[in-house]
Length: 99
Length: 494
Image (cartoon, rainbow over all chains, first blue to last red; front, side, top):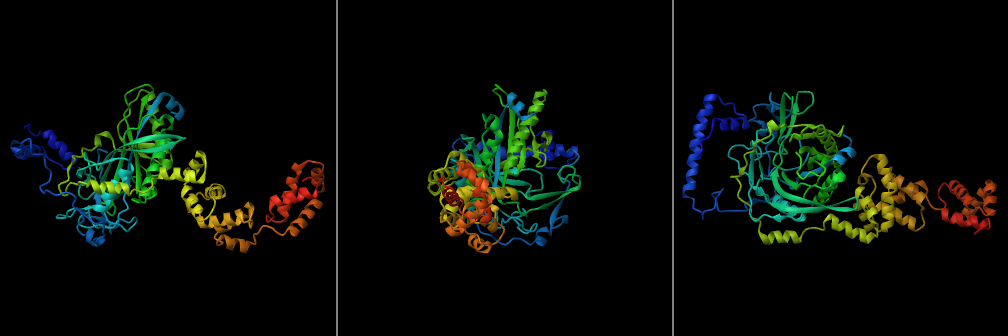
């Protein structure tokens, strides 16, 4: 199992727009490494006759009928927003200096 | 570089990605309504706002519509497939990801035939998959209202979660100088297929059908395709054509100068027909797709798929072939009606009792001219096929001639009522009283003795001026053909 590198953590942090300090990069690289190693143990017990699975439930085709249900009011919808303008969610600049 | 020169040196390869918002009542994964134009953030709920603890459940109707689209495009329908998470940081989805499909689309490997310049071009379809639409961001501050240079953005999530079908073509080589027309014809045909299926209102101006246009160039004779650009959200059929043309000209100029094409997203500008650079390569996203854990896999039942296939409506190309045979019109006339969006109108006019030739004549003649003058599509003229059928009936019964019929159409378009109302109000009626017509002719012959003498001496062509005089004197109400017969008879040359 190859270790997660600082560069990989920095790349993920950038994609997620998380500002991580240098020491955090090392910290998370080690933690992610442990998580990946733990999950990888599944491979040790998965024989060739066991197909990879993504879902725990043995179900398919769980759908809902195309029916409208009540929405929230804009007041309710926006009540948890850090900032609101014109009944819309106000968010900080999306593309920063790098744009 | 001018288009002709660009095409002499390079061959274009096209690719088209089309997004279609499905016309379901409710959103893809929750019960919020989908109508366009509601006040901001009134069609949102804990699921589409991604509030903690909420879970999506897929809309059965949207899945059925996607499979029907795949079947209409001759695709294979997956026996088993999953949704996938597409992760990105833009705030147009509150979840910070979009539920989409990745390596397991519902439909794969189809095709759609389009006709350009009398030639059938087969457009291969790579995949049709189902995802959810994003919210609408408005960028505030900065000069252009675009995301670059904005101070902040405000987001309306009404659109977030509306079912969205993405239809992706395989690369389309070999279209040569017809590339812009092929792109347009494909989107036009696709739109008609969606309409026939009744799965979407496909209004480009409202964004329920949006097209991304990929273009690359390779030097003539080369075997390896060039680097492509992707022009986003081109919102009219005309823009599809212009965007392809503009990209061919832009890329050819760069390549001819020894430059390289950057793989990037570009924005189309309606006003200039040009594109400008959008997201650059450095910002291209690593989406980290993985199977969506909150939704169970789909395994469309084979019998159900077969029954959906059996119940597909007549597809537009088949319908056009049938109508062409029924109406007995040439390929050229049929293509003209298709381009003018007149086929439905002519069909409805025929259904209302008009002969096909007459229905076509009025829609493609006088009414097309009026629509053109008004700068409107034919279908938006304030006249119904039933009214046009009534006008053709009045003409064939002899109550109106073509000239009067044009006045009737003018009256209907001006809101003066039905054709019969206009006839009554304007007093439009062919002069059927032969006595009245003869009196007018006598008067005209007396006033135009020179012309009458010419006709008498054998110059029958001079009769045209006399017929014109009769039409004028009768204010258009005379039957011109009958007037001509009577004039020639009177002058002894019939």
